[in-house]
Every structure is written in structure tokens, then in C-alpha cells.
Image (tube, rainbow, N blue to C red; front, side, top):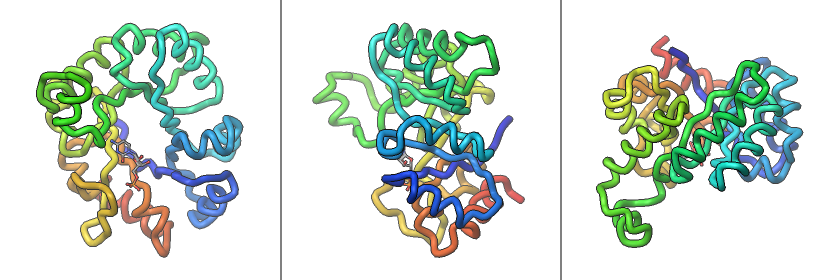
Length: 233
Ligand code: C5P
């Protein structure tokens, strides 16, 4: 079972990203590239980082009609990303199309995971605005089941949900968990947080850590600490 720390590179430009990566010295960690950096720097940044030996989680949260998602996923897989995500709200048919897209070439395909309900959506908004009448945990679990049915590898979720998702869907279904903070660190705008060690105990397969590493006085030390804490070394 893979266990790794993914650094969220929430930067506005390629220059800022490379300036940050220099601080990590010879380390070649798994990096998450989200919409901000991808739209600012363009797809080529994925190729450049892959050429330098980084692993890439492309966090673009695709959600469109199945045909469009299938074709977009084919292009994204060609960039060499190691992990990609889509919205489970796009339906099982859309997620199946996503899997066809990444598998089109028949080579080793990237991991594909899904977003269930965004953590910014609370139960009241989900029920009153989106007219989803079930509870939030029920909805998250059902969307995760849909993702598994469509052949996806896992979901993005809170570390606090990792255990129930593994219990329901098996330990092989990946949980990729943001909302990570060091015990002595700032929470910022995150509410339901866990330390890397707690995330490990709860069964997270990958933790996504942004500001506790990117804004640390010594990012290399913070990354090493996250790895040691998460992997229990
Ligand atoms: O800086 P921080 O550690 O809070 O960064 C967490 C990263 O994970 C950010 O890129 C954020 O957008 C992302 N994320 C999250 N919660 C989710 C999904 C993604 O914090 N439910």
C-alpha cells in the first residue's frame, strides 16, 4: 500500500514554484498542482516537473459530460501526471469515461481519484441549495461507492473520514487526505484537521500538506518532519 506525503504547491507562477522547490534541495517529493498554478503556468509545468523527477497529482477536479471528460483525461494522462481527480457528482458514467480516457494508450495509467462533497460544502447547504436530502456522511460514502463502481482508485477526503471509507470500501481503496496540521502549527482556514501521525493511525494513504510546509521557515525540515511523522519513522 503506497503511503506518501504530497506537497500542495498553491503558487501563482512557475517562478514561485521553482523558488520553493529549491529550498527542498535534492528531495523530489510528490507535488500537487491545482487550478491556480496550472492555469497560470500552463500544462508544460507538469512535463517540466516530471522531467526533474517529481511525482505529480494534478488536482483539476474535472466535471463535465462524459465525452468531454474522457478526451480531457486522455490529454492529461499524456502529460505524465501520476494522479488526477474528477468530481464524483459527474455520475458513474462520467467517471467510467474518465477511466477510459486515462487507459486509452494502454500504458501504465495514473491513479484516478474523486472528490465526493467538497469540504467547503456543509450539510445545510448541501440539503437546502443542492437539494440532496441525505446526511453529509451518507452522501460522501455513496459518492465514494459510485467512484469505486466506476473503477476509480480512491477518493479525496478528510483524514477523519478515511477509516469509515476503508471499512466500507476496503483497505485497497485509496484515501488522499488534505487538512493536515502539525500539533504545534496554525490551523489557518482548515477546520477539521489531523496531524500526519493521526492521519496515519486513521489509515490515510496519502496526506496532502500545503502551508505547513510551503510557509514554514525551513520547508525542507517541515517536509522531513511530515514524512517522518506520517510514515512513523
Ligand atoms: O495549505 P493547506 O495544507 O491547507 O492546503 C491543503 C490543500 O488541499 C489545498 O491545495 C486545498 O485546496 C486542498 N484541499 C483541501 N480540502 C479539500 C480538498 C482539497 O484542503 N477537501
